[in-house]
View (cartoon, rainbow, N blue to C red):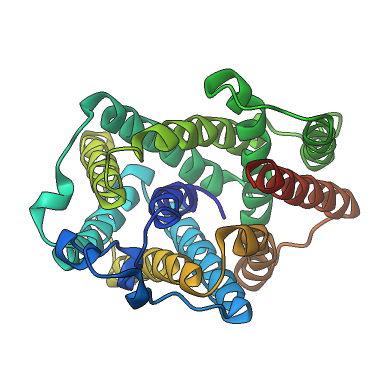
Amino acid sequence: MGLGSALPAQQMSCVVSILRHSVIVGKFGSSVDNREMTISTTTDSRQHRPLRGISLSVFGIGCITFNDSMMKLVVNEYPIGQAIFIRGVFVLLLISLMVYRQGGARVLRVHSLRLQFWCAVLLVLPLFLFIYALSQLPLSIATIIFFTNPLFVCILAPIWLGERITWLLASAVALGFVGTALVLDPTSATFEWVLLAPLMVALLSAFRELVLRQAMARETAVSTLFYASLAVTIIAAFTFPLGWVAMDWREYGLLALAAFGFGLGIYSMTESLRFAAASVVAPYKYSAIVWALILGYLFWGEMPTPMLWGGTALIIASGIAVLYEQHDATR
């Protein structure tokens, strides 16, 4: 799912986190305003339709991965900062619509400047790094390596939040990193150091997820989404002196499609929580790897090796084991 998906993926986690604590969920995954929150829970619009929830989740993940592929098509030929800036403008327009639907500027109120700052920093760094990785690596490989993110969260949570880690979790994490080693294949003559970029993105995104867990106690999901996206766009604008070039309408179209895929992906992922619990849809985020393999083949003719298939299977198995074990631990 990536941070070009890490943009979608981690910004999405901010939206999804607050939904877990909402009584009523509206369009674009937004909590309804204070006036509506006073209505009895009998107006709860959630439904128990897990198949629909799973379908929306898989579709949303596909849209976010499509966003990554559109970015890769552009940054293969144009400056990374320029592409991020233009897409950022489109994304901010989508977020502005979310702000309007949720009641206007009041939802952007900041309660903790420190947490908002770190949420922004921990999006800017991994986003630029992931887009760079996309420009150098196959879409499928960058996506697969990024999905070590839950493993890093599992490692950092006991240190950061004092959460307990069981032997099962530790074993799942170890299995996941064995799979990562197979994907990276550092002993191969074809190994490139840029392969470590999406691994670093996964680590930085894990830190951001832990910061978001703290921020969600007081900040609104849309505010962290807005300020982080704004920071990304402003930092990208400062890359102008590095040599932006004139783009064709094709590239503007691709970046608009990327932003649309991002917005539709977030909408579908958050809407999926109306029909199924977060613990039900969470494992299906690994369908991003399937989408990445399909899109990688269609756009660039990428063909996974047997080693890559084996490593991918281990990463997916370990990630799902971590998700289920953490869910059982919180029941």
